[in-house]
Structure formats: structure tokens, C-alpha cells
Image (tube, rainbow, N blue to C red; front, side, top):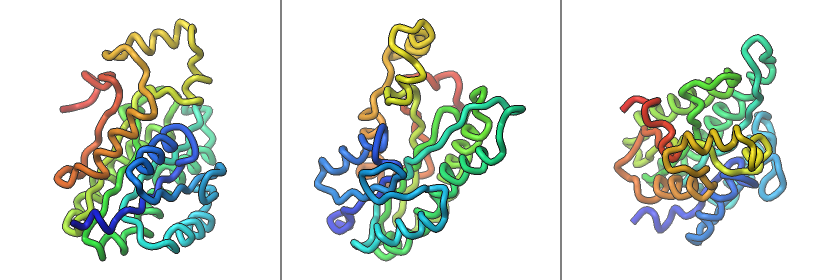
Length: 235
């Protein structure tokens, strides 16, 4: 099977949080996981910088073709529309959408040659709309649109493309913004049908499924949100 020769994985933003859980899950399968992140722990690059991204991808591919890609890196600045700095908006799109395009373009030749590829883009429930997140929600809606388009273009080459949209996930960023014991934090938990905040491993499990078991699933967005999206997203 093609999978026996396609054991390298690239995870952007894999140094911490959800990305680190994805890296751990993939390494548990014995895969060679390459991380590109601004933080230490892999190939260091600012994914908003085209030249740094190009150099990082050259370094990643020096070890051979990569047939599984997780575009996980994300950037967010919370601001109401009238307070939004356009430079922040441009950086948001550069990291959340354009970096994914750059990574996919670099890996595509190897995927096409193998007749096998798996791309998973990390989106967000914010794509449905969330106050204070004009740039972020727009970028995440954009990555879902990109996912659907790539699925149409690349399916003929044995490449599937899907998105995962996390709900509230317990990361350092979430805990900082939502302290334990705060009534507002409890309100968030009460609004989740399964009555708990998600863990990074919950997202990693969904991503792992799409990287391995989903050869007939493409162009889809999987909400991993404990049921919060019920009633908010279309069937």
C-alpha cells in the first residue's frame, strides 16, 4: 500500500498546544514528524514571513518528500471592527491562510508522485462568527473554503483535504483567558453539551483519523466541539 512509503508528516505550529498533541500522536505511530514553528522545538520560522517559510520548507523537504500535512499554526488578535489594526488583519491572513497555501504547494509534487496525500487544515468554530474576531473568523472561514477547493482539485491525485474546527480546548491560552473558578468559565462549560472543555488530544485524535482512515472523506469540516455547534452550523 502507498502508506508504507509515506511516513513523513509536517505539522506547522507544532511546538505547543494542539499542535504538540498532534505531533505526539503521529510520533506514537512511528512517523517522522517535522515541525515548523516560531517557537523552539523544530525548524524555526515566522510563518508570516515568505522567505522564512520557503527556507523552512526547503529544510523540511531535504529529508525526503512529505505526504501528510497538518496546517495547524494560528494567529489571533481580538478587536472590535472599529479598533481592528489592518496590519494585524494582514498578518492573521498570512499565517492562517497563506502559510497553508505555501506549505501545500511545496509538498504537492511529492504527493502527486506517490499518488497519495493527506492534508488537514485546522479551522475554528469562529468561522461561524464571533464578536471581536473579524480577522480571525474571516481567516478561518477562508481556510474552510480553501479546504473544499483543494479537495476538488487534488482528489484525482489520491490526495484528500479536510478541515477540523476545534471548540473550546484546554490550552495555556484558553486557561489564561478563562481562569478556573471564574463564573464566565463555568458559563462556557455549561454551554457545552458534553459538559467539559476539550483537550488537545481530542483534536489530535480527529486529525489522526483524517490522516489515516479517511481515504473516502474529502472537502469536509469536522467540528470537534463537544456538541457546541449543534444548532449553529448547517447540516
